[in-house]
Amino acid sequence: MTIRVLLADDQNLVRASFAMLVSSAGDMEVVAEAGTGREAVALARSARADLIVMDIRMPDLDGIEATRLIAADEDLAGVKVLVLTTYETDEHIVEALRAGASGFLVKDIRPAELLDAIRTVAAGESLLSPGPTSRLIARFLRAPNIGTTSAVGGPSGLSERERQVLALVARGLNNPEIADALGLSPLTAKTHVSRIMGKLGARDRAQLVIVAYESGLVMPGTV
Image 1 (cartoon, rainbow, N blue to C red):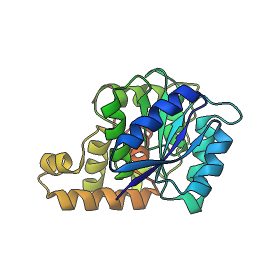
Image 2: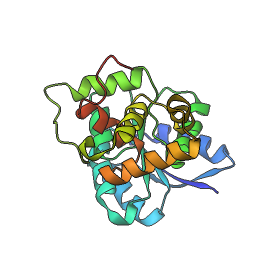
Image 3: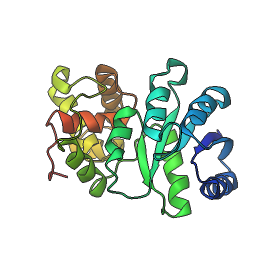
């Protein structure tokens, strides 16, 4: 299956470089390019991309608002957004994840890492690994200038096992790793994650991470 990619960045050189890289992969293709957030939203609707590589800082409409509009559009429910930032400490990363992005990348990543990230997010996984990423999310969720309202529900309605699974998702574990940690089969772990997403109304695992930190299920410094 070919992954249909939309590139959204206001820098022509960046878009051209990413387009050349994506087009070189045998399992993906660039279906459209956007130079502003509004263009990205419009092209998301017309080009029917599977995934959007979205720069945060763009004119007209920034990547966060563009992501929020795309995530709120029922016709684009299957479209994944992978946000780009210049610095890993960008305070807008958590806002983008709350808006509906499935993960983020720093622009100076290696070419192979971009392609792997596209495949990961397109497959329904969030690009949230243990360590720096999780600590970054935790820090900004506790910052006073960041809102406390999550786009999805809290974990109070989850079973104890589901809360355990959610905590491991927040720490960056994938389904096989969760299965190993809890003594489950990979299929059972995957089923738990799917049910949790359904109960919380989450689009993907990235929003599960946000819920886990906002609710206090996972605390800063525990990853």
